[in-house]
Length: 374
Image (cartoon, rainbow, N blue to C red; front, side, top):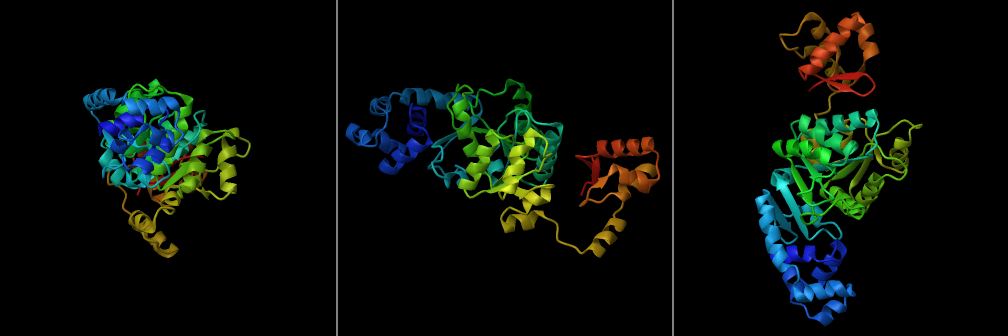
């Protein structure tokens, strides 16, 4: 364990250099027992070779492991059975992962990445939260990058769906960035989620670290959903990495006049799966996983019968019951349709919708659409 942590702390040893070293010498211990000439033949930076030969970071690695344990965290190494299998299968996986929280339960569930713009619109934020909530409530772990905007909304949605979410950090596990997400991190951990990073304790939020974070998001996941992304968004890098790792790439369409939708609309045009609801995401997962989550298909006649036979909660008032019965679980209904078909005044309709939403009996969807919770 100490050799692995020391290797990960060595300057100049990123995932690619670590892969090269491990392929040559078999293990982290083998790297530190290598002769100087063998290391120099791999064309490492001179200071990297010197650090390995002198074992400069071994004492620091001992202290590092102690501090991680004090923080309630764990360290996973590449040749450990606890290391996430899907990430291990990618090219140049991080040799060490720092984790905190219920990481075992998070990895046991199928994972889907949800990422997008930091400067997102209300539409994007709502879509991210809704989709993450609906997926997490059905046993899918939501993986995102703890950034402002779409990422934070995805984590919040998972928490509100009483599901698990993994926050992949571009900093040390002891350094939450941005600081405003400290409260969100506490919620993630309290709800059975976890934090994960490849960076040692104390690592600050340096721009060059975040592409490495994106590789972990896509590497952990069966697929990555891009909710909003402008032309130069880092989320498009995540989409590219996902494609390189043979992961599914999905995107939520956006307004064609919005700069935040350029990236998502572009990758849809280039072949990414268009996503409007959680079922679209689940359908892209391996067939055995999708079959265990998606409801069995029914013909339209049976669907209509089931809609009529569904029993409303007994304590609804007349207006709430009327609206609940007009809604379906598998189809969204616009507020204008509800207004016309219910014959209620707008005030009575709005009161009924608010009451049903507070009781978590309906889903409020973007564009003033509503659906019954299953």
